[in-house]
Amino acid sequence: MNSAVAVTDPVQSAKDAGLRYVSDLQPGIVRKRHGKGFRYVGPDGKPVRDREVLQRIQSLVIPPAWTDVWISTSPKGHLQATGRDAKGRKQSRYHPRWREVRDETKYERMLIFGAALPALREHVVQDLGVPGMPRRKVLATIARLMETTLIRVGNEEYARANHSYGLTTMRVRHVEVEGSTVTFKFQGKSGVRHTIDINDRRIAKIIRRCQDLPGYELFQYVDSDGEQHSIDSADVNEYLREISGQDFTAKDFRTWAGTVLACMTLRAFDAFESDTQAKKNVVCAIKEVAAKLGNTPSVCRKCYVHPAVLECYLSGSMAEILKKKLSAKPENFTLSLANEELAVLRLLRNTATENGVRARRPSRRKAVS
Image (cartoon, rainbow, N blue to C red):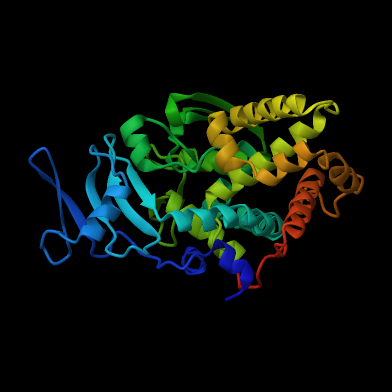
């Protein structure tokens, strides 16, 4: 397998960790209420009595409130358990080794994502220009908006249960178009209210056409038979895989944006004179990025900012690395990486090289043209 694909391939990640990639769609152990506690039943319908298996289950510390609990029959399964919490949200317990390997690779994928962005953006521009309102055009619109607004992709389950919306679940009432200005007004995750403006004539025109279609869902497409269809997050992720030839998802856009924003925010601070001041600056930068992404600072730091950015800043090496890259103009500002993005990509590659990880470029796996 191509090494770049391996970074984004969960099956390969499981193999690298010495584990098996499993799914909760496979037969597994189920948890059933039994008196004041629980009993566990295997795929054969018989109670689990093996002491080692029961100890493994106990070590997973599955919350009592979870329902529809599934537990892997294999101690080497990358996924050890799933269930639904009190709000009906799916939750998971992973093998510790899987988490270690994915932590090592999830940020390495930013190297691949950043290098793949120019070609990905070019595909999006091409699809925005196709006539009518076909699926690819509407998906390209969402992809563009993910970059320009940083709005989450959306989840229909959250929209129904919590009235929190993302791009794919946006309703017609959430958007206003005036000339080339598009204004989104909606409730996002955790009940946070958002008002976001963008100025993009082409996107404004497409959204007006979306608003003209019957129905309350904003993003719909029209097939060759004239039938309307809605868009969901799975469609968006499939589109990203098609045009990039990589296993990228909507979340990668937010992680890339968070990493670039954090890097540029830290760069804007005056030179620090102590470790204490440097750490305070990092906290301030994370808070600023979290506000733009709509996350808590802790989630932002853990999930949306590459640790190499913070490490380079705290070590004092960031300024010199960025200075070299920011002095050059990008070859194509519209479709290529912005100057700041080029600088961040250089920083990530430098860090990967120093850590003995080969900085990989996007694989040549064929993308849809």
